[in-house]
Image (cartoon, rainbow, N blue to C red; front, side, top):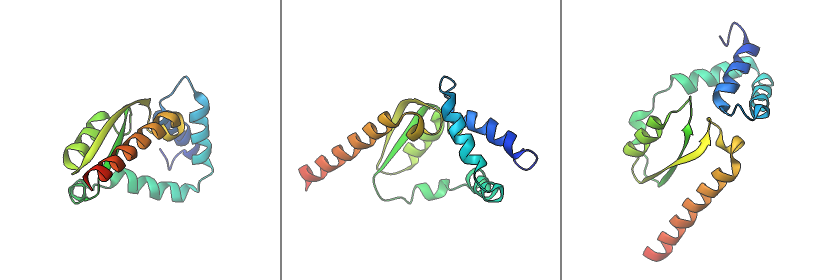
Length: 130
C-alpha cells in the first residue's frame, strides 16, 4: 500500500498507530510527519521496523530496562510487552492507561510520570544498596 498510495498509507497508518479517535489532531500530526518524510526513506524505515527480528538479542541486554506498554496498541499488543518482560533480564513492565503506539505524543504526562517513577526507584535502590 505504501508504494501504491503513499498519502493513503500515511492517512490509514497514522490512525492505526495513534488509536485515539477522540483526538483526531494526533493522527493528523503523525500523518503530516509521514507526508513530510521522503517516501524512499520512509519505506526503508518501514522495512527495517516491520521485517526485523531481534528476539534472540533481547536476552543479551545487560542494563536494567523499563518497558512501557500501552493498554491498547495495534502495532505492539500487550503480548509483545509481556514477551519482552519475560525475556529481557532485569526489566520492569508497566501497562499504561494510554492507547495507541505513541504515548509520548498522546499521553506525555503518563509517559513522563512512569519514566520518572522508574528512575527515582532505580536511584533509591542504588543509594540504598550501594
